[in-house]
Length: 314
Image 1 (cartoon, rainbow, N blue to C red):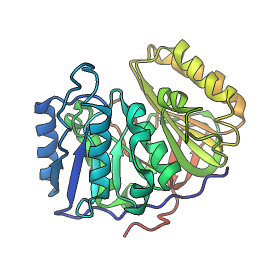
Image 2 (tube, one colour):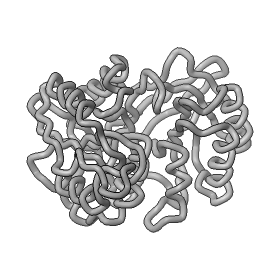
Image 3 (cartoon, rainbow, N blue to C red):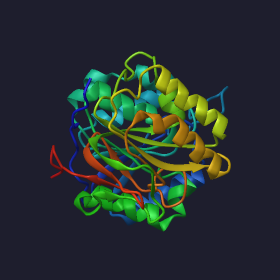
């Protein structure tokens, strides 16, 4: 299928009520409180979901049971008084609860701001495919990535409150792995999660006309090779118009990562830009997913520019 723009929520305004959920791993209470203070400093009214600080009684890598994590997200989404849903952290667990959500009810509740990255990639894909909603690939409030990084905070704040001010994504270090220009609809996230999601019920089969947003953490180059090879073999990258690469935090020497990206993505015959400044690394920019964009990849740099606010953010 050819990707189309997704429904976008209204921008946030001072006083907006926002819910904080933990769909994946457990969140230290101290980091949660610091994140809530950050949101309060932005004049938002954060509410912590009932099970957001839980730890699964037997599997301590999960923030509570699958049912409780799913219920928190669904209740927050379907609550008309809540304007946005922020994920506290990633980790692992979204795959376990995504099919427990009532997507018909969530679709009927309409689009809202939804922020997360890493393991939350599974939910970004589900919101796109099962609800038709645009979401934000951005830093989470219970992570040091946001709490200690002023640039990441500023990028997220601007995207939430003044999205028209951050339509161009990219850092000074951005470079073209494959030069060219491409137009498409942004989609993607963490490479590991995209590969893990492939072939599961409701997962994306093709993304024709999409601009693939791609990053990861903690994966050695040979593992990234396997991840990208799987996506290529199952046809998940067939027909995409370009690739927008972010950070590859703790993935080994970047020369090795770059070699894998060039080898696995270079043969697609489409523009590929590296180091656009989003993901698990420092200066984590916020990337809207499901929106039209242009990828400019001249030989000496690279930028991704959001070209439309359709459906308009009001």
